[in-house]
Image 1: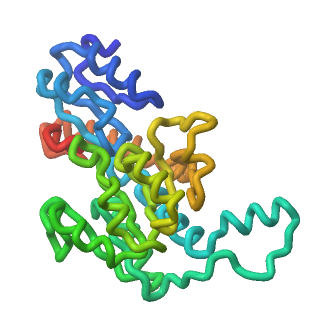
Image 2: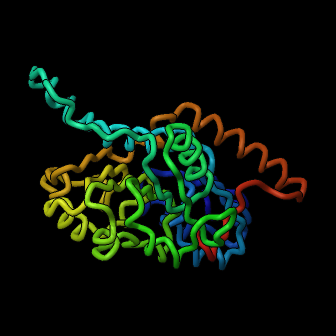
Length: 279
């Protein structure tokens, strides 16, 4: 059906299906709408060749994902994962497994976009000093060539950047070595932003505090993958966006209808993606 479509709303669970669908489109394609924020599943070369506008889902599930990131910081600070395991074993703990107070700690948010800003607002309300990273360095944020030199200052390193070729393996051996030995990585972006081998070495070596991973690479993470059993590693099966699913679809439908009206009228559309930047 997409072969002669002017407009396509493309949202599927498997990235391979997204790419296959877009590649089946024809020269009539003028606008692609998607609930995804990042376009890493889309064949951007085909979309450029079609000259199609792409509108993404930035902001649609931002609240749910931001809340998940804050949950990651809280459960890491109080080690709620260990409390749940103790409760499952009906074991009464006499000491709290996590004794970190959030007040006065520092967080680095890599990617201060729609989601990153919401995370920053919520962490600030908990008394955490927040520093953001943006491509432009706007509003006092760090630029892509500045944040690595500052990694040792932060207790929480939150990954909230869009997935692009530049963000693959963004966190590797040198970045992990630069972090505090009690600092946590909170990833609510894409799994391939972290070099898993480097992360596993840091977790087993105890050179960082731990990792809270919503996305992983690959997904689903197969049984037996070493991340499942790595020390101080929490995996939440990329559920952050789905934690607000009902409202997410309502927002997506409303956004599509607003953009449909703008498309028909030839006026500016919302959430128009930059195909060169990839988001």
